Amino acid sequence: MRIDAYITEYARKTPQSIALEEGKSSISYSCLDNDINAIASPLMDFNHCRFAILAESGILYVKVLMAVYRSANIAIPLPIEFPKFSLEKILDAAHVNNIIVTDIQYSRFGEDFFERFGTVIVISSNTFGEFLRKKIETEANNPQLQLVLYTSGTTGTPKGVMLSDKNLVANAESIVKVLRITSRDKGALVISPHHAFGNSIINSHLVAGGSVRIGNMNFIDSVFNLIGSDVSIFYGVPSTYRILLRYPDRFKKAFAGVRIAASAGGGMDRDIVKDIRELAPDLEILPMYGQTEATARLAYLPAEDVDEFIDTIGKAIPGVILDVFDSEYRPAKPNITGELVATGDNIMLGYLDDEIATKMKIINGWLHTGDLAQKLPRRYIKLLGRKDDLIKIGDHRINPREIEKNIEENNEVSRVFVVPVQHELMGTAISLMVIPVEGTEIGKLYAFCRKSLPGYLCPREILFIDHLPLSENGKISNRSIIEEYQHVKASV
Amino acid sequence: MEQIKNDIVDYLKANSFMDSNSSLKDNDSLTQNGIIDSIGLLELMDYICEKYSIEIPEDMLTPENFDSLQGITNMITKLAK
Image 1 (cartoon, one colour):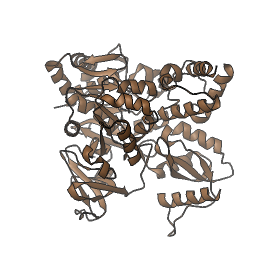
Image 2 (cartoon, chains in turn purple, cyan):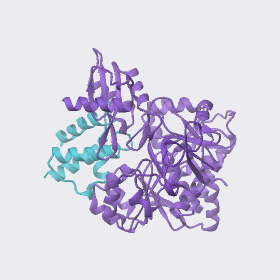
Image 3 (cartoon, chains in turn purple, blue):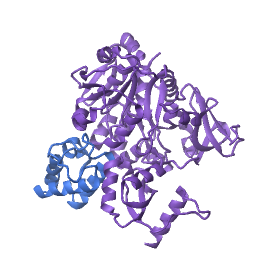
Image 4 (cartoon, one colour):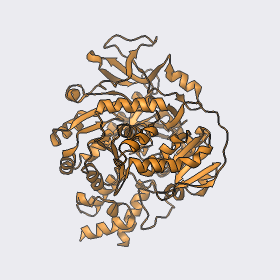
């Protein structure tokens, strides 16, 4: 059953139940189902084609997404927080001919941006979509493909994770079980719905026949009002909680009626857990772990074990098997470090138009996460860093080597090194160490970063260095870069 | 009032995704135009508190007061009195 078919089912069983809320508006299952049909109807002429969606978070976004599913086409939501330049890179990689865009984003991005598309549909909250152009092309896509989520694309080559109907439903049902979501629950969606975590919040609550209240993290007063409006499950990345905890009184009041505070996107640290415990002793804290390649979730830490096992990712969610493999792809013994692997109905179909990357990621049916891990007693798993150089910045997984290359290629510099540094709210931000050339200007480097990278990748400082940050055996790695940075800072 | 507005524009040009040669209308939405995000807004708030020696009550952290140049300027003028 497709995710949008659950909406139809609830529209029949509980037509008046609220499905989505946003600001002062709300929509029942019955009205939501009708609106999805209206938006989907003109899309029926297309035969399993790729549709980019450029829309801000909100009820309208959910309607468009579900309408693309219902018309049996393929949804490619664009992360609107990315600069234009990064979105263009994603569009180049996605080979997408059709786009559905909200009137707000259409005027923000401007007519020129849309020239590349054969079909452009502009939609607003009072229309069901107006075709500016329509050109139906035949596409050969994986028959099971329903949704493509981009994991990176800020720099380097964007990777589109191909997800099927089976993936989405399987993961939504696992999350429903873990969080015990029912039709009475109202989930808070304040993070981006265009990525795996936000997308999974919508799916799991709609599959359970419950509701989702949609907002954002921009204005603190509005966020706390949203949480206080009968939300029973709140979802955030660790930095979401760091921001909210800056206002302890409001936190205490707003979370008094919340049942679960769930997290994903990065590890919750002991300080966050301690602060939440003090302000909301009855609130169940539920950290989860996952990857876009696994639709969203892979593991969770049961609430009763949070205090003791916060440095682990917990255990597999229902429907998923986790293991740790050695370099020969054999299961490693407990307490021996290997690569975390996963299998289940939520594992992606592959990367869009990239068979080579897919073959490296999914081997004999096991998703190789790239995370180094150890098996602990009671099927708990502990992470011990990455196999590759990827790091988490502001709860986003990024490849520092790609960012360095991107800055080097577009600026007058010799070499650039990305250094992860501590940040009060984001957890980790970046600074840059730069080997300059004659024309290097710090102001221009900052300007480039601001314009070409998303906000969380804006460097906190830029330091000039005069030699490569090599390790003792002559290699450059995250570790050698961090050591050099500490050395430079100590000598200032 | 104009001085406050210019200060904020300078701050946004130096610290946000605003192009130094692009113009910003007084009532343009900072968040919808991608000029600032949630972390950026908190940093802007800290900057304003320090620069104008004011404290911003939490219930004033709303779109009306923080999502446009005009809103921010009005709020500072009100609080700095």
